[in-house]
Image (cartoon, rainbow, N blue to C red; front, side, top):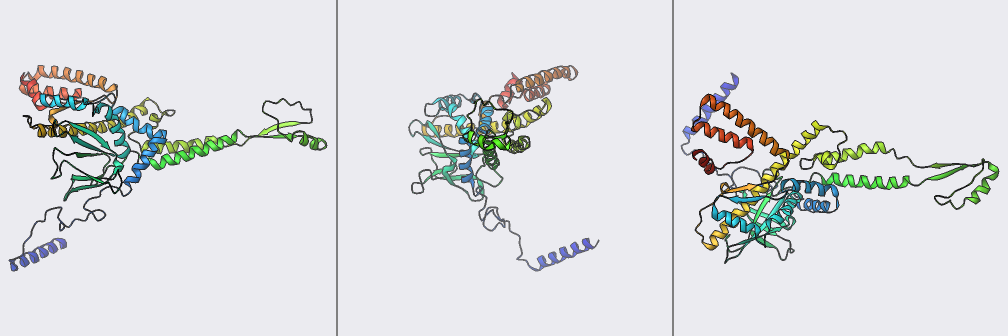
Length: 436
């Protein structure tokens, strides 16, 4: 009750004050303006990326070059998501013809470039593609620019997702270059543009983060640990002979064996000499757990990986193996969807520039006009989808006997069948099937 009386008193004071001051008013302030009351990150409206993004990208590239684990984790993502290739097609004839030429053009060969792009996306967390368009034919060529070469990204005030330009310092500070983004107000089809795609990007950030970023410290620790183990195991091969003999012949034996015998030498000794070898004991069983713990940190921070992907399955059974594989599949499917988005977006930009240069009589196109054929993440997917599709067809047959067959039933049955079969049916194709 006390709180309620307090709120009523405050409301009365505010109402009387507003009545006594006719000039009092509340004005909305648009977000993104300097007076919006929002505090940005690090003095900027939005965080442009980690302060050590360039260093992490350089270290990730170096690790990929020299560390087998880093290369295996990166190639694992590419092997599953790209597989034997991704293909784009369209039911709109002009777009379909353009896609075929654009992909197979000798200046592009996107089917061969795609694995390298996927590797770069995992290593650097982002991909910068420069699109060059011939001002006569309208055909575009694509060239990937290393993410480490992009020093700065400019964006539209108040909207950090609308990127405008990219500073390229690959030729040095003196010969720096600014690439325009498609959203730049001065961008045109007659000059090159740059497209930026990023993964592992925190909310509010412009730059992506490498898949290897959380693994790099543990890769270094594991490399040092292995080097130490190699040095110590090398010392295991060294040993010392201890010869027990009476005191009266020790001086004679010391002189006789002043030069140690070569390996494989046969020494005939009497009963007064007793030989034994002394070697260091490293207690390797204790160190084995340390190495496995470090490898677990690497696998746990990897792209949905487990020790099974590194060739270790001693303490795993079928159930745990399937659970671990399912975690990896979900990550890989998400990355594969991003690659499809990347390729469709790139192709649509190239198509729009071709249409603008040639003034071709084509309609506006969107993502809905493009169909992507992607490789299966796992061979088991087809079998599971086939079983699910067969089960839903059987269920629909039984349901039709109860409810009868009408247009609503057809729509529901087709929608469920496409979902259980793992296929996407566009709106136009859906209507053609239902009405055909």
